[in-house]
Structures are given as C-alpha cells and as structure tokens.
Length: 442
Ligand SMILES: [Zn+2]
Image 1 (cartoon, rainbow, N blue to C red):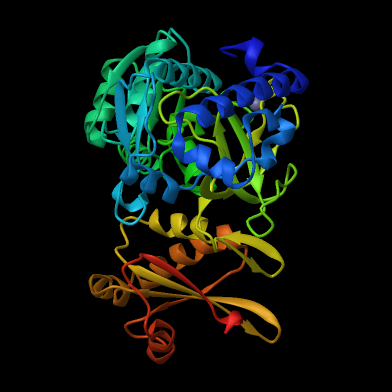
Image 2 (spheres, rainbow, N blue to C red; image 1 turned 120 degrees about the vertical axis):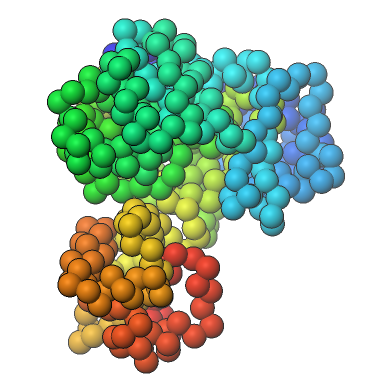
C-alpha cells in the first residue's frame, strides 16, 4: 500500500520544483535567523538570492557534526520564533568529541516525522488492521518514538513493548495476534532464534518486520526471514534529521525510498566535494527541506552509500539508497571488488555467542589478495580447544566470506600463528571488536 500516492509517486520534475521552492525558503530562513550559517554563506560570498533552485545546491556550504557542537557551545544555533517541543540526542559513541549531538523538534517537525513513518510502515504492507509491536527502547535516541508515531498514524493497534525480552515478546505476539514488529535487527534475531528453537513459527500471525537503528547484513536479514517466515524491511533515520523514516524499503527490497519531499539527498565525492551521479558510492549528505527545529543544509552524515534514481517497480518515484556504512576509510578493494569494512564488522558482531575480538588482515600472496582472520579472547580459548573449534572457525569464515567474497583463513590467536598476530597487533587499539588491517598499504 502507498500511504501518500500524490507525493510518493510524483514525477521527478514536479519533485525537483517542490524541492527547489523549499530549498530557496530554507536558505532564506537560515540566512536571516541562524548567525552561524549566515557567516558560512558570507564567507563564500553568497546571498540568499544566489540560490534559485536545487541546481544551485552545490554552491551552498556544508554543515558537519563538528559545526553542530561548536554552534551549541557558542550559542550560535538559536531559533527565532519556532517552539521546540521535543529534544533528542544521539548516543555518546556517535557524538563528536564526547558530546552528544542534540537536536530539537517543533510540532510541525513531529508531524513530518509521523508522515514519514506512516509511509514507511505502509511500505512494509502494514495498515490500520494490523497489530504492531514496537520493540525499541524509548531512550534519548528517537527510534522508539518514531515507530510508535508511525504505527499510531496509520491507525494500527500499537503495543509499546519497550525493553521486553524475547520470550515476553513472543508471548505477546501469540496472545494479541501481532502482525508486525519494529525492532533492531539484533533483538529480532534473538526472537527469531527462540521461535525456531521452540517450533512456534506456525503459531504466530506475523506478516512483516521493520528493522533499523544499527548496522546489519543481508545474511542476517535472510536468516530472520527464514526463521519467522516473513519479509523484513530495512529502515533508515538520523536523529539530526528526524527519527526513523527518512528512508525505508518497499516490497521490492531493492534499496530504501528516501522521503525526498522532506529530505534532499546528495552523494558527495569526499575528495573533490562535487556531487556524484546516481549509482556511484560516496558520502551521504542531507538537507532538511521542512525542518523547523535546527534545520540543516548539506549536512554531512559521514556515512557512505549510493542512490538509485530510477522509478521503482512498486510505483514510487522517490529515489532509493543502499544501506549506509560509516567511517571515512570504509571501502577497501579486495580482488577488484569494493568491500565495506562496516559490513564485515556488522557480520562478525552478529555472532553474538562468540565473545571474541577479531583482526582481519588483508595481504598479498602471489599477486593475489588473501584474507586472514585472527580471533582472540581468553574466554574463547575453552571453546576453541574443544571439539567445537572447527565449527566456530567455519562460522567466522562464513560470515567474512559472505561480505567480501574471499574465503579467509581463521586462526585462534592464542595458539596459532602467535608471532604473526603479535606483529600485526603491535600498537593497535583492541577496544574495537573488529579491526581491519590492510597490509598491502605498508
Ligand atoms: Zn519501491
């Protein structure tokens, strides 16, 4: 079902006109109300009248997470006449220099947010007759509320199942005939594993699930889908823009439709700072076309993805983005293929019963790229010396192979190739669960 056909299926020409009109208004508003941004524009010799439509987007200065922090410290981002009714903050780990990135929403912002989530939940085939379980935490992050707002807006019955353990979620699913779940993928994976273990798949009424808010992989999506017998849809959001619902997958599951009437997306070449065409990977940059509480122009997300502007088979014309990967050095080349380090990290982090640290070493052997994986954990040693050792290694190798397409050799660093491990490990920060070392560069 398409929630807002007039918008979601509008022609790309009409969309460009609408985006251009909103961009011109936004630039004018920012110039006259946000001193910090006015200064940035003046430094480039720009006046609001220089921006006449989206074709002028490239002239505008960027906004970075560092800008937001500095702006807060200096009191630069003051809002003239818009009342903030809700605040959110991103996690410490995602913040800049130990500061959370705080953002605020006006009532209009929340209405836009609800609209985006209503569109997203409809893309997953859920509607007013459905019973939707929201299994996110309602914390500083906006994810839990996003899901709640959307389910409420489409008129579904909502179960705010915050902080419920898998067993409790499954019990509720059965008693209340839950048809849709919105959750992080790792939480839903635990639910799916329990459903499979107890043979409950056929006693559930589930039709679809929507997952977002953390990195996950295609492998885990397929696994969850198989165990629950449903489709699982990917969703994207960013606190600084709005909660979840900035983009979501439709039934085709070929990229997430961006709500482009509210969020103008571009893909940036981080070296030339020029906008890249569709289908080419680069940094994702967003302009909030309607946001009143701390609007953002050309906000650099530091995430990498690509955008497909072709019309989707579902009928929607809104462009689709791939999963986003974070990190400047995220993409590495292995045997001619681009591989995302974040995806490898996500795949290994999903092996939650293996409490291990991993170093993935890429090196050349006879002119060919080869991959070694070293696992280390005192707690793992017992597992690895038992008869499970081969099985554990196989699971790690499979997880890595699925992402990079090269079969790695996996070593238990406590007892195998210790010297190699110590050489690679030297001076390395082992606070990260997964570290990728590219020895071809040294
Ligand atoms: Zn579609």
